[in-house]
Length: 368
Image (cartoon, rainbow, N blue to C red; front, side, top):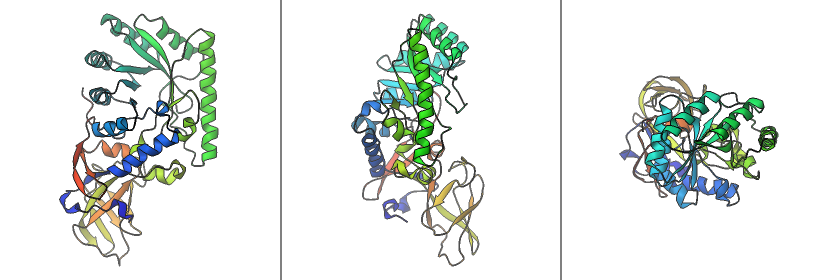
């Protein structure tokens, strides 16, 4: 196992545990800034991966002053930590409309933006904000191929944007574009796919411009497409996973240049057969997303994950592998973001490999 992950006082950490290596987090933040050639105005990192106040502070100290998030609790965490430019990349519906407006009232110094992709959402948000005498910046969520949320380029998209502009309490504030459907491992192919997204954005901008509608801001992409949009003028990038990174992205996109900075620490709780061990790392501690390999064991050669349950994970190992009950096992998760949400706090590891305490996953819960 790479020695940078060895924890010197590991005996003090109960398992299963999420552990975060602060020097590696710092390195990833610096690499993100280097990717935009030092122009932090192009960076709007997504808080959904870490959900933690102290990471926000690390990014702020590096000069990153605007963020994106998915939940109202994440937005509140950002505002409480002095972030003044916050994009909530989630359409407000039902009670969340008034919850959002209440958040905006409580943090008048924060410049909040939300997204919409449907006329009914515009109407509801407009009516509620007008009642309270509030003005809300609203971005159109554009679907360029993922088909999860958003509206495709076309007349309907223009009509929604026009409705925002015509509202007394809403301001049209540009385009939000998430391209999670782009999975090309080859960088050249990924660039081609990104250019297809950018072409759709340009068409949309031209359609809005023809109507006399301004597009103040364009926010695009996630971590896999980050390097491409980092080189694109007029676009803010919104990577999220990069802060902690994980095995999934390291394996599929080595060109990104980030280093996994968060692991799951586990221990052997049973040795049922000479070539099988069981860990205390069930799917309540490591995400069951995606399907298939959920994590890679770093300190046992040729280990193969087998059955996983709520609090157990059976692992097949070569019969000659030296193993002991209680032995520490380091696992690099395939998808770190949902792993973080399973833990109320994580153990922070310093540059000398010592655990120096815990940091709360501040925005783990959704309540405001």
